[in-house]
Amino acid sequence: MLYLHGLGHFHPENVITNRFLEDLDIGTSNDWVLERVGIRERRTSLSLAYIRETKNSDTRAAYEASIYTNAQTGAAAARQALAQAGIAPEDIGLVISGSSAPDHVTPSEAATVAAELEIEAPCFDINAACATFGVQLSFLSKMRPESLPLYVLVVNPENLTRCIDYSDRNTAVLFGDGSAAAVVSATIPSRLRLLESDCASKPSSWHKAIIPRTGYFQQDGNAVQGFAIRKMTEAVRTFQETYEGRKDGGEDGGGNGRRLLFVGHQANLSVLSNVCERAAIPDDCHWRNVTMFGNTGCSGAPAVVSQHWQDLKPGDCLIMALVGAGLTWSTLMWQMS
Image (cartoon, rainbow, N blue to C red):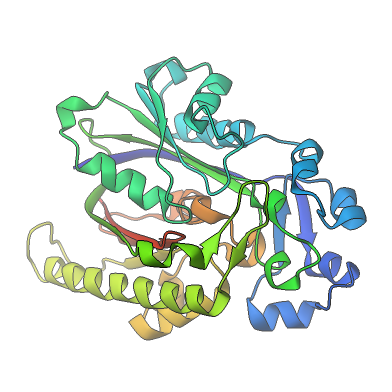
């Protein structure tokens, strides 16, 4: 059993609009972007002037042009999660981080985030690209409760725009920067508990989505998008069956008026809409933020739930279906008491 005590999110203040991308003269327009991926805005830790002048022609320069480090954005999200959980940094006994594009090869990003928060605790990273949050919690849920400290901080800092080629319209329109964090416990109950979790990979397709060291994000777009739709749909359908069994009076049932909510990997609106159509998920039960923040990697889905934290109602079940490079996928099913 794993309990979620607090969530936090952070997005940089610099906004990349579709008009901004159109003005880069890379063959895109507001209508083209909306029709293709449904994204209106995305945030960046880069200076807009830097993107306009260089189109990020040298990814190494992007780190110098960035107004935030991963440690700073991860810590900003973590502070919100800690405040929501009602605990202090010194109450954290373990920090786990994961990012699609960490700032350092060594040490672990968890160590740099912990240092930013003045936390003295064991630190390590679990990285499964955009599926990281699900893999992190699946890993923790399988550990013996007595082997974990009272509170664990899970952090997902993503500043992916530093890895984007802004002369390539296919990737420039997709990605934004954002960070998320969660405080969880295996022993101290809270209102939101993890009922089930799962994760798996298809390593033979690892090359379908990559970020080479000091290079740009690259992907086989059609293959990755099709894979994401299939895996998220399969996950939702499987967990829908579990939900229906509980709703009908099985274990953890309780029935009437319960909502089944869906939060997927925030790849783009087209992917998410396709999943919802295939799995018959009504729009009011589909929570997303991709339209205003773009694809923010592994921080996207937990940030969505963080933004909707006050909207959760007793009896709600929440399915999180995540897909990332590797190719890796993970699913979490939560219940609100």
